[in-house]
Amino acid sequence: MNNNNAHIRNLPNLLEIQRSSFCWFLEKGLAYELNEFSSFMDLNERLELKMYSQNYKLRKPKLNIFMQKNKKLLLAFTFMYN
Image 1 (cartoon, rainbow, N blue to C red):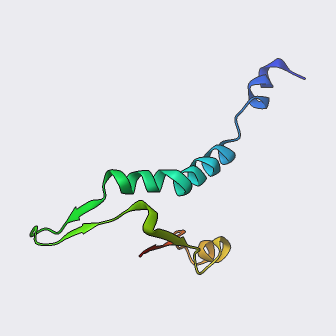
Image 2: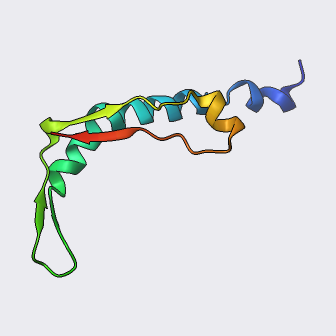
């Protein structure tokens, strides 16, 4: 095999890196961010909303990824908070 193509054989699996990063975010990163920015104020500063990381759930999308692609929609999860 030609040594000019050696760099192609050593490419990282970018899809796996992105998938594992997204899984980490769902499992740990989102809870971390909710803890860091747990308080939100409305524009008039009359209402404060506090969120705690142990009280949220993500629901699976209603449509699978192929149906969403066909309809040109973004992949969306429902964010539920108790």
